[in-house]
Image (cartoon, rainbow, N blue to C red; front, side, top):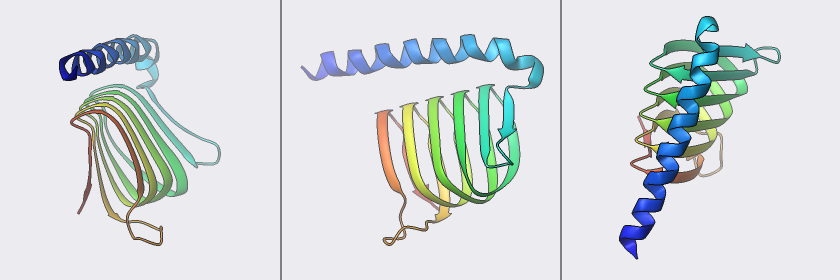
Length: 130
């Protein structure tokens, strides 16, 4: 039963990663990066980006693989899907990870517990306090 569950997760990862890579091709001309809605949303798609942002209370969305984002400031929510992505942030309230081997490094959280609310789906994803 455990092997079937692992095989299902790996199949979902492969399908999701293939979709992320296919989407990244269409936006490579704009470097796969958007910062919209009055600088309140950072959206990154693609593979292999190394980016730095300043954000105050917005959201961060990362799709694709092997991206490295450093965010100075705070985010209400970070959503990461794909494989091998790393996000470094000063303060975050909520984190959602899907895919494999994604990591979010944070310093603090605005929640009562001092830890962000975390939702993890996939293999090898982790949230680390620095």
